[in-house]
Image 1: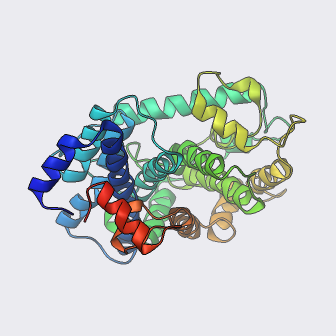
Image 2: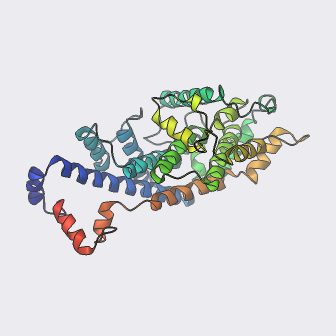
Image 3: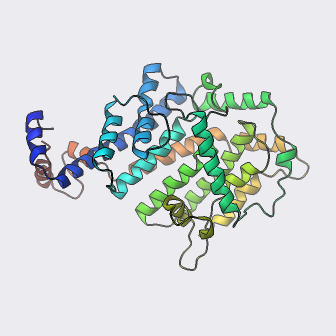
Length: 373
């Protein structure tokens, strides 16, 4: 970067469009590095506990999510440089719509922060009233969807009300087993408590991220993504029963309430529209081919075979085909692939001395034009 005095002179003379372009490039860089830091931190915590100062640093990306998305979380240490930059950007450009790449990285950061930090309590954990509000919103969304498109209508879900919940001793054992393999069993008092984020709570954010990726690429969803999405739903159900001590069929209905149903969306809800469009099969108005079969396969896998107790079936399912620990690893791999699938931020390309599609000379010229050296 140029020295401070020359930068001050540059910004005095730079037009608003140039300042916005540079600030958005900085934002893109911060988002990319924040997601990367979250994923790296999560992998480190899988094998060992992280000292308290390092955990505080790892809270930063979630604080960044809070600032940029205006989510109803409590804001914490705004002295942190990156969080402060996001506040500044939002203040300076309140009506600006960022590029599709930046919008995608924002969605990626939001989901990554929620998913990777959900098993432990931290300064950035959602306050209980906020979490309850979030749950109510998700339940209302599922209720609206199911009023037009009940995917469980033909199934007998009564065992999920009659044979559950699991005994507390079983729930505790399951929590410690998952935590020991995923993060640390020292966190067992938070994971599985009413104040912790569950897979079911993060499922809508996963869908929103997938919709953002789909919009960015302009492609139809793939067979592999549909299997990941359906497994997310099934794993969310298993976690609710085995870890959170839930009972009843409402959990299943909420988790699997996704598909192509234009009647269930509000015209003003652009995110919900984008999620619904994930499952749009084309101009004939049908659902994307293969989704109903894949969803129903995972839904029916939760039902016990005749003569097998439900609790035994669910425990066996989680220990084998639908391992929560294995699923955590699959989602982490998915996030890493999404992060690297997009072009690197311009500032990273500047650092290596050449922009994609530009010669080194053209890159130098462009760097000079926006005040970098």
